[in-house]
Amino acid sequence: MANCCQTPFKPTSISPSTALNTHTRLAITKSQTFTCNLSQPSLTLTTEPEPLFTSVKSFAPATVANLGPGFDFLGCAVDGLGDYVTITVDPKVRPGQISISEIHGPKNLSKDPLWNCAGIAAISTMKMLGIRSVGLSLSLHKGLPLGSGLGSSAASAAAAAVAVNEIFGKKLGFDDLVNAGLESEAKISGFHADNIAPAIMGGFVLIRSYEPLELMRLRFPDDKELFFVLASPEFEAPTKKMRAALPAEIGMSHHVWNCSQAGALVASVSQGDVEGLGKALSSDKIVEPRRAPLIPGMESVKKAAIEAGAFGCTISGAGPTAVAVIDCEEKGKEIGIKMVEAFLKDGNLKASAFVKRLDPVGARLILLITREKRMQEFTGGTVIRISPQCDARGAVMVMEESGSTQVQRRWHRFIFS
Image (cartoon, rainbow, N blue to C red; front, top):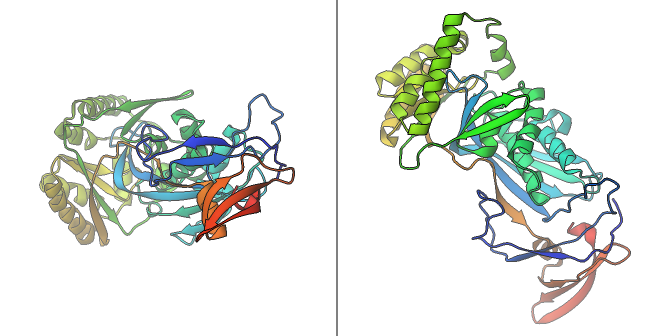
């Protein structure tokens, strides 16, 4: 760990009504935090950012990719389901590196950050920021099952990238964070941004170009109702396996048809036309016909959803989750029941159904721990003031209150850095 440069603390004001960015939700009430420059001056032209917080926790939502004819270039985020990542400044981790401390969820996930979705995205984000003097630990809480077709790997990557970016002061924009997530997706499930982009940005996202990366947010009208009925069977469909089933070449007639349906889908999103959206996402003639036979009962599930009143139904991402759209939540619950019954009857698969809204926000910060809070965990008292600079040995003087007594102590910066 680098020596402290004795740079004064810089106050940063935070309040529940002032978000760190336009879509951050804060679960704190503390009005002020302090940071210290703990590293030697950078040798590069770009100054290495300092960690503004001890620890941050982020959330990234589930996503529905492809949306029928939008293979690899259309996706959207859905509310209420997703993964959580906590990033902590950790003096036990070598500077410039990241360590995965714990994973809550599937036991077969690797703790090697080079082979973990969250770890890869976190490392990529650290490199973009030029972090060399601070080590981080990562805790992953999986809320999404693996191979579900709900963007499980993208949710982990998005939450990790956003958390690292936030702890260092939100220096990177959406494009950078999506690129960090793409590095993770490329290694784990394939190079495609239709999950990671909406997971980070929220709402509907169209990938206009990969080289260079160009992203377009599609605004769904606020005054319109849209519900996704997600029926997830107990069956894993690995993305790489499902991509291998796709044709290497397609006929011109199918190409023209899918392009027209993708255009209709985009127009329907912009107009808030849920019925038109459903009709378009049900009309894929290239990808769904190859993948549906690999998911037991999928064709019957789609038929059951539409007969129950859904405006349309298709495979979510690579599957096995089926997604239907409707404009009424109660009707969505009825459709979900029929989809679950079809999975059991014709696919011999148990399934669960959820009715969810569009998530317009995407990955966001949900909790942060300030330096004062971290000090309180060590002292057991109330921190009144932290000295404005580190001494030559990297320590600070802390004035704390315990009962009616005020005590001044000397604490090494490592315990709350």
